[in-house]
Length: 319
Ligand SMILES: Nc1ncnc2c1ncn2[C@@H]1O[C@H](COP(=O)(O)OP(=O)(O)OP(=O)(O)O)[C@@H](O)[C@H]1O
Ligand SMILES: [Mg+2]
Image (cartoon, rainbow, N blue to C red; front, side, top):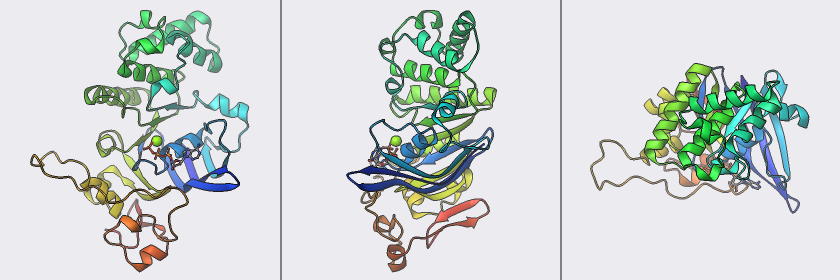
């Protein structure tokens, strides 16, 4: 469905370039939910933004590698083609819905505009489709909501509106960048349920970006673990939880609260922090934080290699 190959993203400023995403490769299959997991700053959002080339206007970006969707490389299609693909074939949901909703436009008009751009439906067909979609994502007052502005909605409702907008044109792939991080846990569970249900009904593939192992366990079939701009592990969700191969993935698992933990028991935080782009040495980028690291780890970059069938890890000493 979607194949990202050797994706490298470089931001250029003052004649220097930094690469927060460095040779990242992965695929998202038909009807599959793939998790993109990693700590803050490891390049998850930049990866997602480069798929649709949605960078802030002011940033100077150089993209290399390829992002193939339905036989076409999205990194090289022209702007008009890309606009036709955005929203229609590949839709995106962000962590903070207010960044993608226009505060000055009523909900109904924003969703209607999406359909006007991408379909040949008449005004009244668009209106009824918008209301039907808002109802489908669990917004009960849909007829009134279309006449309201985004700021009058709660965070959970806004995220539902975003999901409605994303699914309106029946996209083949939905890219979700931390879609529930800003919501409280009960609303988060409702939104994840809704996404699972809609995925079943609509057969959409999902790329789910998260730093939350719980979201991965609940939503995904496969998972890509990123660290400092690189893929460090890739496997089925089951294999990742049963036998994490990379010390970074193992550390992420230890850093999250267990259900059977005794009260007061401390979590094992990962010491140190993700090296900013360009600051990692020549060796494994996790070496400075890894208990297993020795000279070879600090000096030579390990390749992403198969440790079991369908299970890849970038480590000199995988589990
Ligand atoms: N437009 C930009 N110009 C320059 N650097 C950028 C730009 N956008 C992101 N970066 C840098 O790229 C790196 C990766 O950022 P990214 O937002 O992809 O991380 P992330 O994994 O999504 O983290 P989080 O979990 O906090 O969302 C960071 O060091 C960030 O400062
Ligand atoms: Mg992010």
